[in-house]
Length: 191
Image 1 (spheres, rainbow, N blue to C red):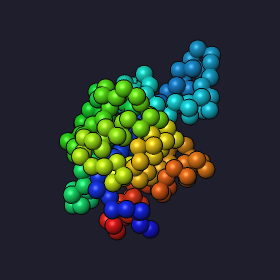
Image 2: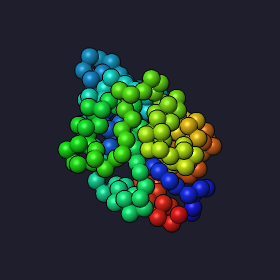
Image 3: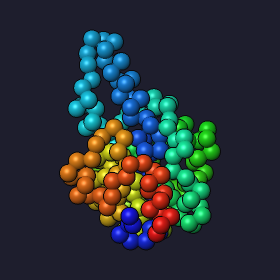
Image 4: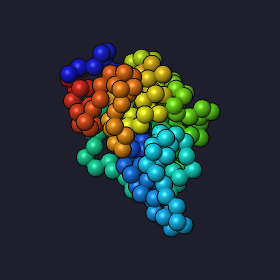
């Protein structure tokens, strides 16, 4: 399966895609709410996924593992950025210990955004920082708000679902829905 255009750059979301933080945050919020006799319904949490939030500094569990092979992007000479609703400190905390921050050419964090996801600004800033037209960028997202933002920016948007299943709207906004980052790597290598 090929992508609609040649890929000239790749823009990653962080939380839920590169780092499995959303399930951890949700579980922590449920435990905290239960501690004072309340509850955190999943429907409420789903509305927050992909948006800027005050809980990013509590995110410590990550899931990069054997994920997306950044060496494949090096071999293809593709610049890459992170467009995240998290802070720069959170990016360094989550990815820095593993030497992954330096693998990205631009970090578009909430610290440099005026408007966060679902607004396209984070993705437009990422494309500008990479010097690549948004239409030539592949955006990888796991959240509905992130997909909305990337699609509005005019990027080839691929959803890699984590906690949120792709809806009819997500299918309409994405060029593909991927099972995982390995599948996306195959598409890039085939291009």
